[in-house]
Image 1 (cartoon, rainbow, N blue to C red):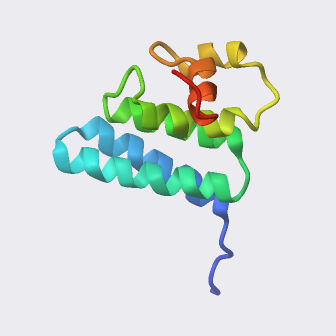
Image 2 (image 1 turned 90 degrees about the vertical axis):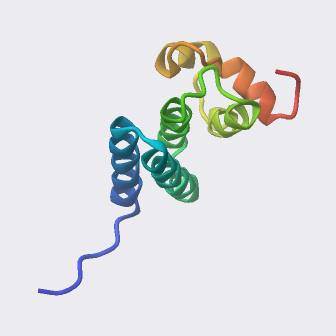
Length: 114
């Protein structure tokens, strides 16, 4: 049996699932591991141009770290993929959940005031 072809989408989802699982386990080392998994997943989603998946992973990263509302760095991380989406920021707020504002994230990514 030969080597399976590399599928970046599966890599993105796998790292996201591992990040959510580690976050659910709790504990400092698991939280750190979850953040690393999310960083890899977000970077890969950005590389293969999947802004909606990048957005949801960045949101999961903030939730896993207990940063709700999101920190300024987290807002910038959320805002970058929002800027690439066609949807209005107000339409994304229900998907992001409580503690997150797509408009604030978009302003943060543009370097504006939060």
